[in-house]
Length: 321
Image (tube, rainbow, N blue to C red; front, side, top):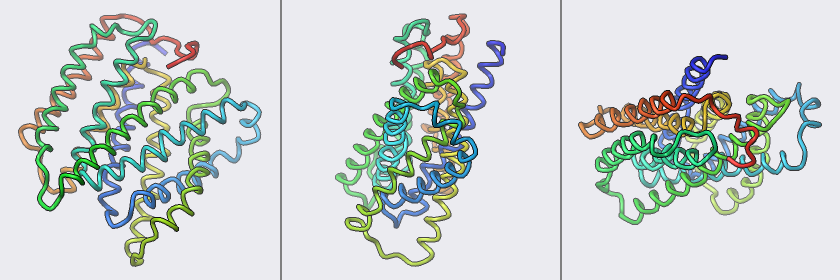
């Protein structure tokens, strides 16, 4: 595959993953009556069930390829990228709103890009500075728009949502870096199969949450609420966890880490679009400026890679990502 086709294919996968992952920000709003732990259980039980069904034909072939280190890695990736992350994100959306949650998570490209610029053969940080500055400017526009505390929401609740969003950012940063590391070093396991194995591991961890939820987060809701939870959980599991993660894993094998970080920006963009649709309004001037600045940051990053003129490095040979 040529360098150009590799970059374009990777970008298409990244945009697709962002469009599907943006739906995750809507889920807590669609079932706002239900606590985040039940949202997490619902989503990942379905994700695990679908993953187990799809991975079953290849299970006997894959098991010999996975040693103790791979299973431990799957456990940590499932925790940081799914269970812990979604618990915090759901809490952030319900406490602080979609705008705040998407804003904080929008800083992920900056974090990953800065870390990625330290690796051998990566585009130097000084060449990425225009992209980083443009993205920060866009994030600040969104932040200025969302800084006012909505009526009926206490400052403590808003602060709690912000802290949960920051925790989700940290959790997913760990996942993004380590998941790419393992995708690049695996042999005989496709990105799709790795995604399904992560789903099975996530489901196992989610089962441990059930007794905790029953004891500490027991809730009484009508059949309509539980039915909506099941529908939303199944939809998010298929669209975000199955298809979205599959596209992301494919992209991770095609793009360098610095560009991977920029692709995460599309999750923020689509989350904001879905938020506008949910709130039945259009973007304000500041939000429109933010869209333009964020897109400009991605274009700037692409230009930096073009000027750098290097093939994406074989990160599978790197001991740490």
